[in-house]
Length: 626
Image (cartoon, rainbow, N blue to C red; front, side, top):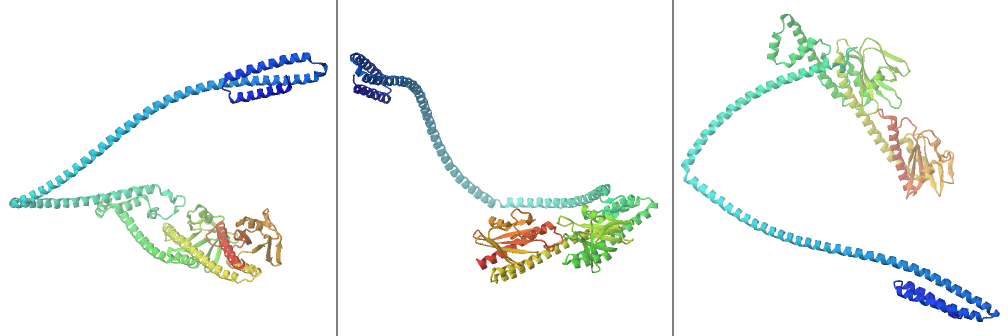
């Protein structure tokens, strides 16, 4: 067999392999091809063996080549046989899977048929329900028509009954007249009974009022008894003085120092009617009637004097509530000492910036320190302090640090809306004929109204300051708009901040072409990059407040201020691009100096004012140079 024929056999074998891959479902065809291939190989081997027996020594190379071709052919035949077995196994596997799929298909088909039957049954039920619904609607319509007909019949029957009644009235006039007369007699009888019941009701109401009056008296006795049991709430038993923390709701404090028998007799007498008091007074032994009458007479005289003083005090308060300045308030409080019958009445007000308490006496200002003594106790405890004894007590320290001692002193704190008390009232040396309890009562009333007046005066001062600041802001804005260059603009800005904010320094740094420069006393100072804390603010494009600017990481002494005071930095922006930066220091103690505002609140308020100032400068700069 020649080499070309072997090549044709190899090609035929490859084509057989391809056909086997294309049609792997036909087993008989593969078996036939396998037999043919084996028969061809046997024939080729036999022909080769007979041919090799005839070869000579010179033809051995050719024989070698032929043997190699046969070896390749055998290897391909074995490879094809291996693939054949693999394909056979795959075919068996696919065949089993196909059988499983057919079994599942049969189950699904049975399930589908069952669902179709159920669906058909439900459709029939829906049709049945629809028919019943239509029947019900028809019945409802029929019943509505019947109701309408019955309504019409009922109206006709009512009209007939009305006609019959009217005809009966016409034919039975005499009977109606007699009936009306009988009705009138019965009505007169009912009227007489109603009048009698009204009289009985009035008697019952009078008895009820008397019983309510007795109930009120008994209630007052119970309240008074409870109050007597809780007198320790506002009585200092050691010094026997009243310690008011707020205005009392009644005048029981005026009877604290009476003996128990006297208090019981007076309270009982005030609760009784004249008839009851007469019968009760007759039951008192003859030898005790005189002392009981003296108790009652003294109480009436004392109460009359207290009522007159109370009325005069209310009239005085009408003059207090119209005061608008602190000087008038100090003068009013000093004049109240004569009315309250005390040697001196002093108003002390807190200065939050210095920590001193100050007052004005005889036209001169006086300052004290409340770091210890009775003044400190009164302010910290927020309660009235009584030192109404002959013993000398430590009150406060004067401005030089010397301790001040004093006797017969009463202190009342002024508690406002601020964190700390706004001040206190000092009452010194009441007269001997003056009641200590009345002094404390009137001082508590006076302190309540003084707090209101102080808050009103402070609010007026704040409003006036805001109005002045607005006027300064408008006038200085016009000056900024008249600037011809940036140097003049810088000077106008500094003049504006000194008038408006009263702060120590103010700088404006201009930014152009990635460079920063500012005008100062040495002239024009510049830096060829965006640097410092101001440069950081220019990049962030947001204002910031720094308590210590020199300790910041980006601090640059060429651009940033060298100060230990708080600094407010504000960028001037246009189209999201920083054109300049404003630096403000907040160091002057006169900034936002309101009497009853703590320093932290003042600093925050100043930050708001600084922001208004910067916004005004920004508007002027953008209008003038951009």
